Amino acid sequence: MDRGVHPRWESLSAEPEFRALLRSRRRFVVPATIFFIAYYLALPISAGFWPKAMSRPVLGPLTIAYCFALSQFVMAWILLALYLLRARQFDLAAARLRRRETREVLESK
Image 1 (tube, rainbow, N blue to C red):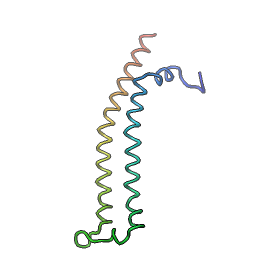
Image 2: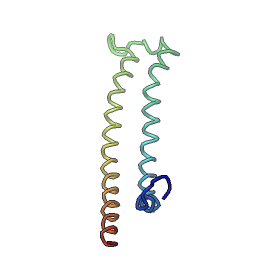
Image 3: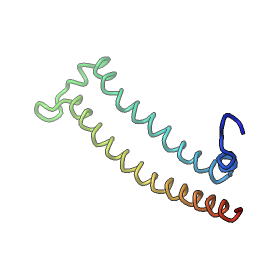
Image 4: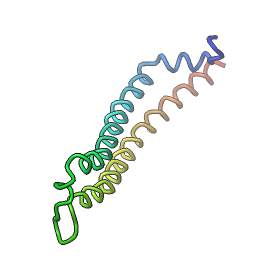
């Protein structure tokens, strides 16, 4: 065993289904995180570089900056909903792998 790693974990981590699950999760989480950070940082960067444009009124005292700030709440909720939908798929795939692994361990005894 390498560094105390359990042999069953090593065999599971080498399974194509497990590796596909990790790739699928990573393909969703990494771009979503990058999008979230970019969207979040766009407001202070825009306000810093283009203060006149961001302070332009849209509706009464409501400025572009305020609209953008409020849109961040909407974006976060949409991203949360998308993640919850995808997480259900990830959880189901992980449960199938766990069931199969448990069945194999019980059959080997």
